[in-house]
Image (tube, rainbow, N blue to C red; front, side, top):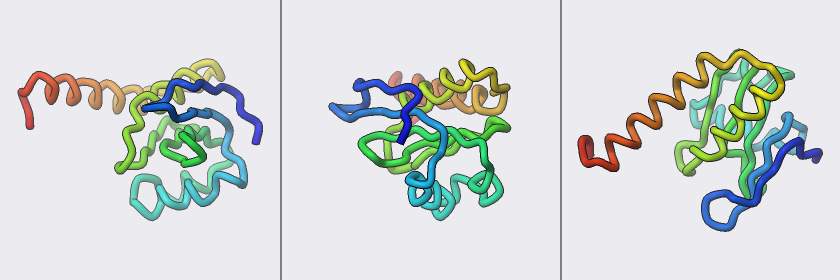
Amino acid sequence: MLSLWSSGTAVGSGHISIHACTPSDADGVANLVELGELTVDHALSADLLVGVVDHRVVAVLAADGTLATDPFFPAAETCELLLLRARQLGRSLRRAEFGVVVARMLRSWYTRGWIG
C-alpha cells in the first residue's frame, strides 16, 4: 500500500495513514457502507481517499466532499488529515468542511457541558 501522507500521532499510539483507496481497503469501505455511513455509489467511486488507523479504515472522503466515518471510532484527527490531504490535491470540500465545523462545534458544546 502506498501511503501518500502519514503520521504517528493518532489517538493513543496508533498510526494514521491517509491515501488513495486501494483494493486492500475494500473491506473497511464495505464496513462503512454496512453501517450506513457511506452510499454504495460513493464506495464504488474511483476517487476515494481513506483514513486508516492501525490498519482499520475509519474515514473515507469521496471526490464530491462526502465524508464518512466509523461511528464506533474517534476519527476527528483522521478526518482533519483527510481534509488537509484533499486540499493539497486541490479538491473542493465545502460539504466535508461544513460537517467538520459542525462536529467541532458540538464537541466544544459537549466539553463545556452545554449539551450532554
